[in-house]
Length: 133
Image (cartoon, rainbow, N blue to C red):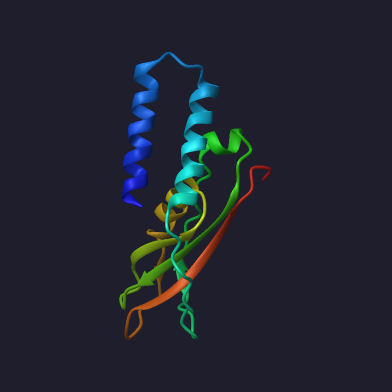
């Protein structure tokens, strides 16, 4: 996931500085790269979530990236999250989705809080980004 962020950052910086391209061309290049990274990135195999899900006490919805919404690009993002015994989200692993949407969903999920438990647990969450809504 870190490699995708580095590549995206590199592309964004170079598109702005190398040629005075129209914004729609820059957007098309970004979207093409995001698509290529999404099919090139290895997909993790989904594991079964815990049988007794932890109760969520604080939830923040992900923001929809403006460039993708304006381009009418949506999709489904699946994440596996590890919840600490204290109820904090310890780690977020993408299981599928557009890398730009995965980044938005991951940022929101990291802020979630659960009821404390005896041990850490794993669960999977899914977000649907629909540009029409």
